Each structure stands twice: as C-alpha cells, then as structure tokens.
Amino acid sequence: MPNHFLLYIGDGVHFNASSSKSIWGITSTHSCAKGFLTTAKEGDLLWFVKSKTNGQLVAVATFTGTKRRILGPLIELTLTNSELGWDKSEGEWDTEVHYKDLYNLTHCNLISEIKGVVGIRLYNDKCKVNLITEYPQIVRYSKVTNSM
Image 1 (cartoon, one colour):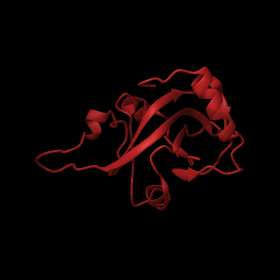
Image 2: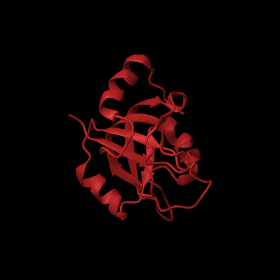
Image 3: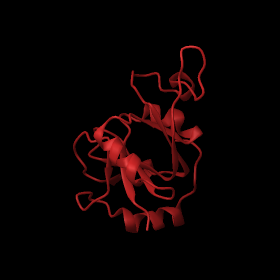
C-alpha cells in the first residue's frame, strides 16, 4: 500500500509552471523534507495542497523519485528556476521531486482542512478527506493531465 504525502505548493503559480515537466521543488534541509526524502518510495501518492484555501487538494500524482539540483556558476546540469517557471519568488529549492500521472483536482473541491505551514506531511486522520478511498474514485472518473 502506498504512502500518501501532502505537499504545500503556496499559491500554486510555481506548481502550475512546472507541472508540464512533472517536477516540484523542495528544500532538502527542512525537517519535513528530510522525513519525506528518507520515507518516500516510488509509487507513493503526492497530494498537492494550495495555501490559504483551508487545505484544498488541487492535484494528485504518483511519486517516481527525486533528483538533486545542480546549478553551477558556469553550467547547469538540471533545469534552472527560470526554465521551470519558478521566478515569481525566491527560494532555495535544491531537490526535484519527480512524479507521473497527474490528476487535476481543482474542480473537485476536496478540502482537507489541514492547517499549518509544514511543507510536506504524511497523511493522517487530521485530514478531513479520506485519501485512501478517494484516490481510486479519482482514477476511475478523471483523466491524467500533463499540466495544471
């Protein structure tokens, strides 16, 4: 059985910009990211939560892995913030989270009521949406999208 992780995506602008590449960025030094990086395995489910919406779940995808970002002064071995569309605000996103099979949930009005600023958390009973029972229904009645 896969783990279910909730990832905060701020206002969603950066998430929407990089969703066509199936990449999200995190800062590996944050305590919540450390837990995610040691626990997450291929096939786990990533639920993306927009801030200031009472925990609205805007997308879900299947985790495929992570990649350390390499951005040097002369050459980049990974996509830059600008290439990913992460140029609305500054951030030290040093790790790419890769996923597949993205489902856009904005029209579903799934409100988790998760509060707080923890960037990544493992699903638990504080979430008002039963992710384990919802996911099969989402797959059954929705279509995978390549972007938000």
